Image 1 (cartoon, one colour):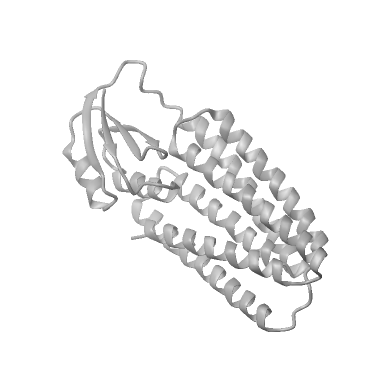
Image 2 (tube, rainbow, N blue to C red):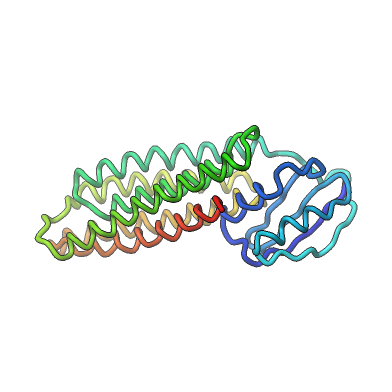
Length: 264
């Protein structure tokens, strides 16, 4: 068993990892891919020398550079993908369930902060779902799903931005701060549970490390919506909710473009 080390400067989130996995799919020599997202490193375990690996990585235009190829130690290659997949499925399900909860209560409470946060949860679900797509699926099918997911998310985010703009200009009623605070606290607890599950894995895989980063960001966003709820209460104004909603919608738009990149 050999291992090839690559430095990929532009690999900074699960979207790039999913892109790399799809690009390298079909190369029978590859036995495992180990991602280190913090250090922008990729380790490819393979059974034989294969220049096609480096060629495909360079075609992605992520700045991939081959550092070295050495013989892997006997106990170095461990296939624990099934365990990590189960953990990520758990996180995906939690994110999707809270997407439904937050978008429903967001419309009921007239809170753009909750609606925007729900789309952020949906964005994470899309990325995890694409990364964990069934092995039997073709690359073409994955790309189609990525494009549809990206356009769907982008459309929702743009509609949200338009709605926020309308509410800034119009005389919209003040959102229900009680629902905002209550649901965001539940979402914060859910994200904290996800973070605990991911940290418990003690994995160096990018799926896990990047998921920890994303989930930590989600906790911050939850805190922002909670703060907006208290500010709505204190100021008796709709603007704190609209400001937080605008910021989160822009984060969702950025995520949508990353998903669309997978479909190219």
